[in-house]
Image 1 (cartoon, rainbow, N blue to C red):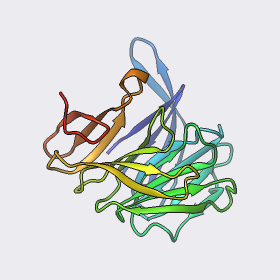
Image 2: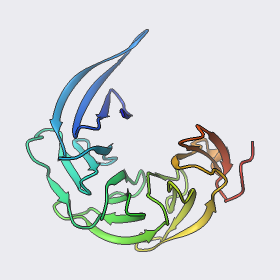
Image 3: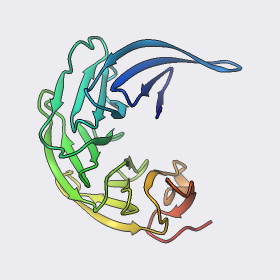
Length: 220
């Protein structure tokens, strides 16, 4: 498994072997890259890597060891913080909020989505937790409505989650379970005039489907 998260000229490359690399992307006629840093970020498979939206040198990783690490890219010898005991299974996704500084969500194989207050980066504070009924493989913040999250919950399908205004609560607003195999990917349409539109994808049937983010079944 290889995954890429592009951020301007840099990306993160994940592997099944607990290795993580920062790659500088070069986009000419063909995409090429050079490895800037590579290190053993975890003891088990790395499932998630994400640059922080607010701190240029901070990146987040999650793995099958149920640990969330925060890293300073200027010094990768040791993480700046580690959350070791909260997640009861692998950490599948980590997303810092694009509009609300210090707010981060995590998803885990333990079938919970979590919200965190990261004003103290040495010790992020858990503010809310929700059982989803399935492993939370992907979480995506809505591009225009800051309290909405889209979740891909593996065997439980897809859910739109509503966070409280102060991010101390989280609940299921809509559930979409039309796809019958593992829900692995989901994202919002980022065009302002199409903000209710989402795209979902599932594993074994290889389907990518548009859907109405208000909870209606597939619309195309």
